[in-house]
Image (cartoon, rainbow, N blue to C red; front, side):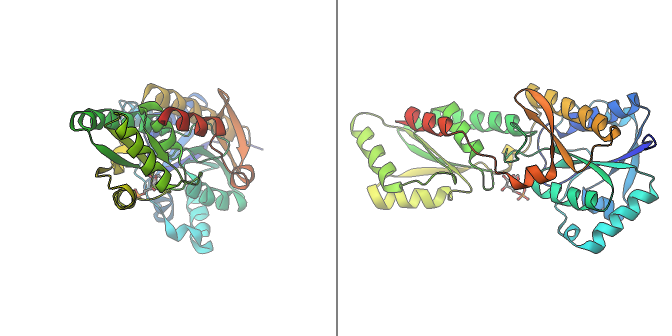
Length: 322
Ligand code: F6P
């Protein structure tokens, strides 16, 4: 196989902090390896529109501390269709790209895999605050998101204790309870509701009531968006036990912000390793942090396995919340 001369790069799906350091590392490693980088804007949408430019070191100067993605991103529904995938391959050929790096989450990897199935060498980099990708102990952006969440909850706790209130806080995470669970442990939440574990609002309501009688006058309940809405939980607690609560839906503040040191280093490691693997003819795979090292997993492995939350962490959150 002749050595690659040009690789494509795109960021797709929800943005997450750490993507910019990762883009930076891709460009630096590529330059080191004498490979050119063609960046497509707005993820797969830009690949379809052939909206691209050649990236040089100056393009990635001063971006390591920035949240979001300088390449822009989108969720491209059209890419599910064969016609779109063929068009994407045409554009990669037009731009003489021998391979492609896709930075994104599960949905983006489905698109990446479709291109790989058509013969293009593709390596994925897991970036999502949801931390729901098998083969990546920590996806890019999760650490920063957790830090953003706990910063806000710490502030809410001041008001909760001053006013003797119960707060219900809704976190993102789509179908994963990772952010809610870890933030619950990190902030000493009284209860954490996640989609992975059945919960009983009646039991939670009675526990809060009993603890109130014992002198526990403020409470933080964290609800993962995949488990329920905070408003629903609030209504139920009021109905079951007359508990009056305040609601905070954290929303997109969880996705933005300057990447943490962890995400900057992780993004740099993943970006550099992805380039090196692409040059070693690896394809249809993802690079991810596993037990401290960057390991490669095939897209098949990633799609066919479910990332589980550790039962010990779930137990710990329960014990600490009592
Ligand atoms: O996948 C990341 C994520 O932030 C999820 O936690 C959330 O459910 C979803 O994206 C929100 O997507 P959007 O920004 O497109 O509304």
